[in-house]
Length: 386
Image (tube, rainbow, N blue to C red):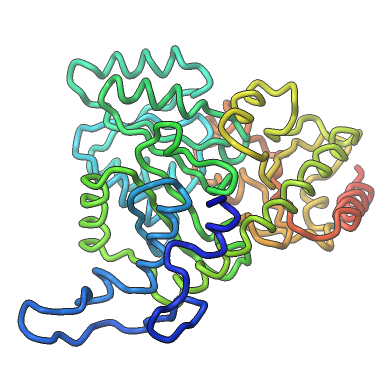
């Protein structure tokens, strides 16, 4: 079955008991036990809930995995993955990483002596060197990939990095938020764990906060499920239902996001106010061919650097249709200032080194009329001329 049909019907297509075409909301905390040691598969909703289970099976299906898990946020999902590791272990992370992920690694797990090393994943020799250096004490337990990265849209070759990681006994973890399983399925390229901020494209309507994990290894699923149940960061039944509804329209939404983003990139490439554009659909970008190999579209997010002709702060406040706000992947266009918003947790020196400069903005292109979006950008540029 093709991905478009899987999105609509999911792993559990409706409710067999009543014939409902939608999975019901099992809004309950506990379940009646028939007798000691005998139940109908559920005991307590932190451990398992039928609505959440339908969602978990659906993300596993969409990502070509064997198991899925649903969490109260994307960061809760990432925290569960990081909880697999022990004091003295090390993870390799990209040089420009979502600020929330960097913060939990640097400020929370650092307290438990989880080490990290930053690398440019486009330089496979550097990745191999770091893995080789950690070979003697087997300290490197995982490589953590975002592809495209947030916000500079760097592309990582999932297949090649996964091969390297396996060679040295490390897990490959891929944050697939920007692409979603509609466009990219990292498990098919050798990754071990896929994480999503399902708040974004999977939900698609800026009305739910959620995180998802997909794996294709039962032992790994057991470990993560134990962490999920023990720490309690589960997704509630109502939010699981909302997310299941959002997933049904993911394909048609992302087609429009892709189309609009490509046209916005073309518009910005001709603008006298833009110094640089970060977008995987630019043919002469270094990751273009790799991205085409592993993804079926370029997504709806792009970032760009505004030049000195424009007061970038005034530009952001001059937009009328496009909303200044954090997050991405909703049907409405959202623009943000990474240095002070999504990536403020990253130290200034690192931000400058990797290119998250003060006049960089990130645009999540929505599904509005493209002419209206371009007009809004154009008017904001004119209103913010210095």
